[in-house]
Length: 80
Picture: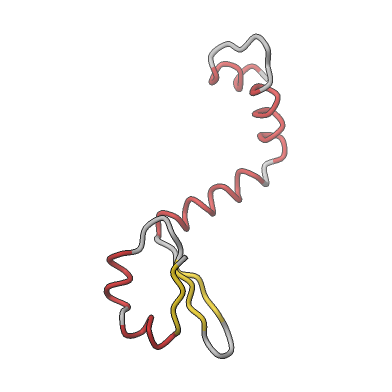
């Protein structure tokens, strides 16, 4: 876990942008804190949240995942 103060993050901002990967960087300030993520990680998180809110899709995926006689994955989803 990478934890910095605001002063450290400001001083090393360009280096942090170049180094950020899958692990978030935590920045602690006096009044607020923030988490820095790569764009790829952020967009992946948003996609995961969006998919998890799709109740019907989630039900169908779980149902097909537990199907004892699976066909191709895509045809299973299309049949319902």
